[in-house]
Each structure stands twice: as C-alpha cells, then as structure tokens.
Amino acid sequence: MGKRLLPPENGGGDHIEPVDLKKALEERYLAYALSTIMHRALPDVRDGLKPVHRRIMHAMRLLRLNPDQGFAKCARIVGEVMGKFHPHGDQSIYDALVRLAQDFSMRYPLVDGQGNFGNIDGDNAAAMRYTEARMTDVATELLSGITEDAVDYRPTYNEEDEEPVVLPGAFPNLLANGSSGIAVGMATSIPPHNAAELCDAALHLIENRDAPVAKLMDFVQGPDFPTGGIIVDSRASILEAYETGRGGFRVRSKWFQEDQGRGTWSIVVTEIPYGVQKARLIEKIAELLMARKLPLLEDIRDESAEDVRVVLVPKSRSVDPGILMESLFKLTELESRFPLNMNVLSRGKVPNVLSLKGVLQEWLEHRREVLVRRSKHRLGEIERRLEILAGYLIASLN
Image (cartoon, rainbow, N blue to C red):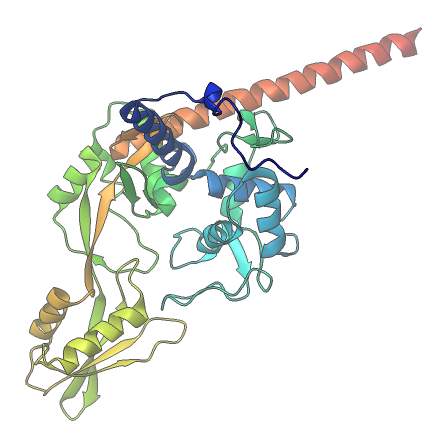
C-alpha cells in the first residue's frame, strides 16, 4: 500500500497549539529586528566593522593574505567566509569585499584588489572568479595582536570553528572609513574622516578626559571624503552635529574657471560629492539641458581619465560663472547632503547614538583593554619559558 493520503484518524489535532496572533507577531518581529540590528546593519564602535566585514578580515588572515604575500582569488576568500563564518549569500559577501577595496568608497581601503573592482561611474566589479585580493596595511593594523589573546572568541554558526567577537582595532576605523546601514527602526550614517586628525584628537582625549567636543574639533575639523569636495556648512552646525551625533554636511563639487583663449572660458569640475555616481550625475545634467531647465549652460563633456574632469561650457562669454554654478548646485547633485547619524553598537551590545567624543572614548577604552590583555598574555608566555629554563638549569647542574 502506498502513502496514506487520508488524514490520521484523530484529525491530527493532538499537536496543534492555539497562539495569540498579536503575541506571536511581537515576539517574532522583535527577534528579527534584533538580529538585523546586532548582526547585520550596525557597526561596532570598537572596530567600526559590521559582522560580514569582520568575518572577511578574519578569513583573509587565516588564508595568510598579508600585504607582502601574493593575491588569492576572491572566489576563494568568499568561499572561506561563507563556509566557515557567514551563512548568507555569496553575492552579498562579495559585494562587501568589493566595497572594502574601492578607493572612492573607502577613505582607507582594507582590501588591496587586483582586477576590475568597479569605478566611480557606478559600473560593477568583475565576477569574483576573475578578481584577486589581499589585505592592506590598514587591515593588518586592525588585526594586530589577535593571536595574543587580545579579544574574545565565540563559536561560529555551526559550532565547528571560532571567530572573533570584535577585532583589536589599532586603527580608528569607524570614523576613518565611516559606515552606513539601515536596520529595523534605526539607521546609521557616518562619513569618513582623516586618520591623522582622529589620532591627534584621541591623544588629546587621553591627556584631558574632560575635553569638550568643541576642543576636539580643533583637531577634527569635519569629514574627509575620499572623492574630495568642499563642505559649505558653518562651524557651529558641524559642532552641533558632532555634539549630538545627528545632523548632516552639505558637500559641493570643487571647480575652477579654465581660460580657452579669445575671451572664452569653460568650467572644469575636479571633485564631486561623496557617494554620487559620476555617470548618473552627467546624465541628469544632460536631461536638464534637453528640458531647457539650465538656460546658462550650453554643453557638458566628461573628459575624465584616472581623475575626475567634467567640462561645462557656458552659453556665452558674458555669463557669470558663479551664477551658473549656483544654478547647477541648486538643481543637480553637484551639491549633495551627507547625513550624520552616529548610531553604533556601544560596547558591542547596545545601539546608541554617540557624539564624536563618545565614539573616540569607547575606542580608546577598547584599545586599553586590548593592551592589558596582550601584556598579560606575553607575561604568561615569559613565565612559562622561565619555568622550563629553571627545570633545564636543575637538570644540567645535577
């Protein structure tokens, strides 16, 4: 007789539990929201990484992809990350890896890529079977001391291996490279900064624990975007953003007037706002030109090679370049706003909006803990060696 297609005699009702829908939804949605906040979208304040990036760095260390060694295929790295540490899609892991290698996305790239890793026009990277990668010096700084009991480990998803809960982080990665993410009910958006300025501010904070944010702003004047641009906000509004951890920065393109001879001139844009795709920007301006929304502009050309060079040709030589640019800033993404929302996992556990000082302080506390743990580990190793040597001495004397 084949499989029974009839329901069981007792109606199968002995394993059915009635559940209150409201309660079930609350519990399950909360569980989902918490996992998104903790294990996907928000960076840890101590090393500035989300779990996927941390796992990529850890896997690259295990594959010995140091800056002085050879490259390995990205497919190999992604396979290692996916198989051992990160049970999600390979494409999402590769996308995260690609972003870590883009010098127009990351102020200090953590991955040294070989091959096509996309460009500022918004073109995609080549497939992972064609590209290769290894770590940069910044990545080795983030990992320095990881073998000397500097951080805690936890079991991986299948409990066959171990992964670090957080990296030692000898580099102020959260603020230096920035971060952005959308969780459930909260988001984060942190622009990149200059690492040298951050280190100066941190040194000042070590010496003066009560230093206000205004004093730290003598060192960290504002964000430092890898694509350049000019921030046109007042110092007061930047200070308020850094004090509260919420705000935004208005970033404008950098331009100059280029003389074409015989009284004619054109405008050359050399830096565009962070996060703006150049090809899309030019497309948008061309559309506005066709729609006659830019009466002062005659033509736009993209003459970029390695560097950005967008040429804007005015209608006539009598046009005022300042007024022409103002109209473009108003209508196009030549001026864009980068939001600041320093929502991070404080102490690796609690989502919290921190000020500039709060972020630096938590990073310094983490560094101090790492230093103490590494020193204890080294002392323990010295003591063990001394004990063995004492045994050798007794043996050789007798």
